[in-house]
Length: 194
Image 1 (cartoon, rainbow, N blue to C red):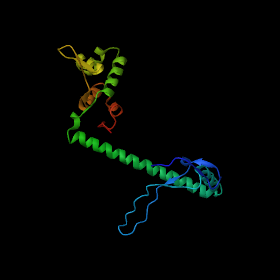
Image 2: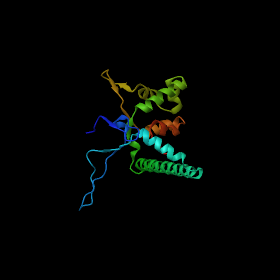
Image 3: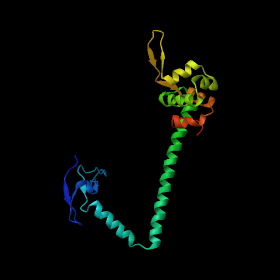
Image 4: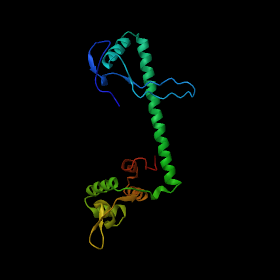
């Protein structure tokens, strides 16, 4: 359980809240197994974060121009490494999704209809009417109306909600409308083109 309270800073001698200090859960040294479990309670720094920031600024100001350039270069290099690592992770995820769609037959995977429904409603408004949009993509007007409404009527006269749709159907409709590139925007990581 975290402690709540105040502590006196050793540098500026002000009483500050404990959240204004750096907390560290240090590893306990243990003999034998070599495993080092963490402390249950944290070690709280004696100098507040405000004073630490001032200390870092002063230390940076004392550096020469070349040392500052080196610090900036290292920071940029680390940033590019992080971006590259995140991109590789994203590419790996997309490759896995493509594999699942192609090899494992996940074209029949069902997804929530809501993002697709919003896209259909927008296309109907852009085309002027439901009939125009249905004719353009070559689908039955009642089926497109079902997607746009999000429900259909049973013979017993009560509405039945539509919760999901096959990703393959979404891809076919988008391709027919000339917007296959929008699949990744409607359903992220479902785009087979990426």
